[in-house]
Image 1 (cartoon, helix red, strand yellow):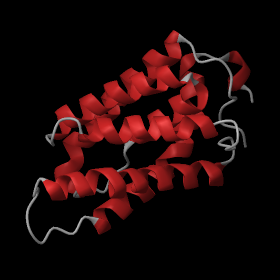
Image 2 (cartoon, rainbow, N blue to C red):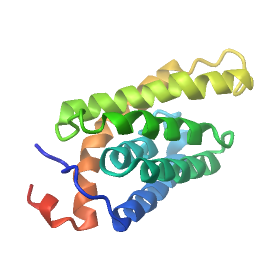
Image 3 (cartoon, rainbow, N blue to C red):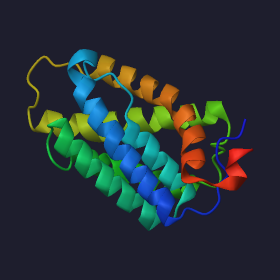
Image 4 (cartoon, rainbow, N blue to C red):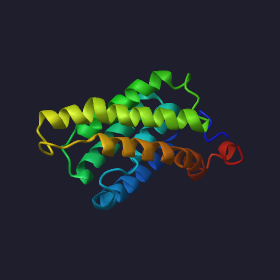
Length: 173
């Protein structure tokens, strides 16, 4: 099943990614007290989408904006999610033509690995260096749950985005 054709990524696609990312990030921040932080990271999924379809600078700009909003709304330390999302776009972009994100399993595996990798390699060490949120905090269960939820949420978002942008080639594909 094909979700998206790796074709042109216009200004409307960029605006759609940003607006949808802002809305989903705000919704995620609103439900964090009930989920314990184990929900899907919509910003990561949208950065993967942008990195796969757009030029590198556009994907990095989207990652910067979504990361800034994620840090601001999430109540964490400013710049941590921005760094993780920018590095995600930067790492994925050269591989975008080699990774077949049209199929469900590779898409889910890619999002799972990038979400978990960004959390373990960037977010956790930075928060540990800053001694936040405190001693005895074990982030691994929440990180695994968040990465799994992100992987499960990626296929519906990849299916929905081209249809919302009005790409006639992708509507019937």
